[in-house]
Image (cartoon, rainbow, N blue to C red; front, top):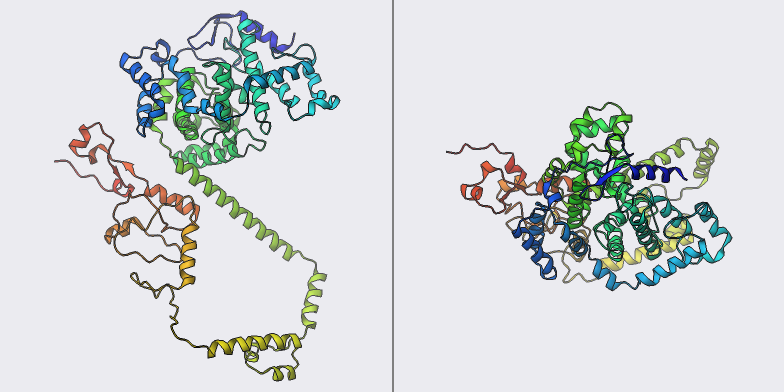
Length: 599
């Protein structure tokens, strides 16, 4: 019997019972490899003691899903603060992911492709309920010996082998996948079918480690077919995990770099501490982001995080990561070695991930989509700058260490070429000398012809009628109310307006007065100075055109300054303080003003 199967049998024999979410509770003297926490701090998630008013609100929301307006997002977040009822979670997740619309618009038939998968299993000599004997070792050689299996309609045998290996590693203490009993065998078979069918559905991605945890989570709450289409929506939609499981893992690397930037902004001391110990965020961010925090020990916290992720998408992933760093900051700062620091990040303690501890920190952590996009632009700009600097260094090195023989030969060739007309002034003078005179001075025939053509063009321009010709004026000479613009300048200004970075933050329409003139080059205008001169109408006005530098780092800093922030309680009027409406907003410069005492 393989070692993994023996461990599973031993663990299955020491189970006392299963908790509310289906995870095994073992005897006191037995500890599994990755134990789960069963002391759930959120009683509603266990007892489902939702009031009749909340249950009615959830029913109305899910029944009228297709007719909801823009306010539904706020209403949904307010309801989710008190938890999602267990019997509504399947419908909610399918609506948020849009799995039904994806199934209707796709030509992929689940049943027909399932038959094709089973036919391939028969050819390989294995079953969806597991491999027998040495079948796993023979799978890697099947492609070499049987050419029919290389057909594009079949799933890659390497993907099938990896899926079979990961079945026993996915939620090994959950009753749906634990042991070799009847329910566990059927649960693993369902998981195998979902993953192998997706490898057939999208062969460019196939299967990647970490997918089994996402598919296993979906199978805990819905039927197999619904889980497949929800899984496809999660993996392929830009709002969620698109690009996380490709060959190069490009998006997860970019997001890890963005998370590192966010840590330096919000937790500078902790970021410096982690960097000094040689710990890169990619080491612990990858399992967090790719598995959507399913490795956390408190399952009520995992479910709440999934509810938020399916509502807001990848933004919530950064939000949860920053909340974890906020809660664990004091513990991590007290750790003085990489050997202890990395296991703490990969296996977070129960005190950090408990519902009552982590969820309030998540709700207090705010991050916007523009921050992620802006920081990605900053990272790309820094990468391009490093590439240019490295190219300059290589070019300089090539010049310094070039062969002396080559340099001497180039110098000799340059000295051997006769210079005909000497200085630039003499060349300019020869343009207005006749062709015969130029030929007499020893100029070449081709050079004489070119100079002759240039002189003819020059004299035609001098002798042409100059009626109805408006003298071109430079941008500096044009006043704010001037309507005189040359076509070339107008074209240049129009191109400057089009070449706007996605991080643009300021606009000309935010200012009062006559600002019809647009500068040829972007110029930054401080909102504080503009307010002093009475030019700024409202700092919270949406932006359309740029008045800041196109540099990504400058635009990110300006956007951070430009973003409205909630008022403090002392800044609000008594009417605003007593009302339940959303608070008014103030600019960051208003937050820096000294507070006045209330009389």
